[in-house]
Length: 380
Image (tube, rainbow, N blue to C red; front, side, top):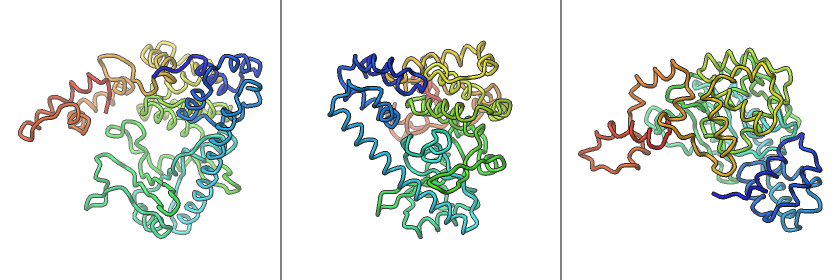
């Protein structure tokens, strides 16, 4: 897609908290298509930030664009307040059933690092539970009016291979909720077992609409946010904002713990990429000692350059190269594990979509898959 550079420059200036209002007004004077700017802000989930900077954009915002921004922000407010109320009720329900549950992303991230649950758009509700509590949690949600939408096998596992979530919907009001028993936000098929046992011992709390709710501690949250952004090829600006906001909200962040966990989980480059993007795109204040860790890592630096250049105009475009981007993000041991695993060569729906073969020749997909991965530079 082609995005006007004036819109790109203004949106980046808006999301950088330190940008001088006079500089923002100068950029606003050059906007020719305000609808394009609003579309861009919505696509990258930073519309509430644009709304908060409206006073800095005067007198250049047309009335029609101002009304559209106001209307879209009102929708975010209603959605997030409904999500917050429902999440509190679900957590209380689970607590009554003796189910230890940890919400993440969405409104709890907005409340904890943005300082206001209305300043970051929320999607559905995400809750992490133990696998042993999954059946009881499912029954509790069904009593609350939810329906399980995830197709299951006879053993209760999702039919989709390597899925570690149940998706629920309450049709009466459209509320959506995902129960996870493992965080597979990084390439799950060769990831670690990241569940309640990983996040709970060092968990923190935040106030959400007047209620104290558990959340990931800052260090764990930073690791999760970076691997989530990497999995989705940093296709939304809000994911970089999440990293920058987390770092800004916790000036006493335990960086030694962050890097120890990143190394243990094989996420050293994933965490580095998130940090470098926050510094380059949003001018996040990163300790020099942290940046020094990656100054000689040419792969991570190249990936950061790529996403910083393409995030707005070509969102989701993976870096070019003969070796898949996701593979290069892995540490040496995980690369070795992946190459030896059957999963690496096991065909999936993307391979079958790339080359249609008759049933008698379908075993050839095992030979086609490596070439398909190299062609589209994907680790999936």
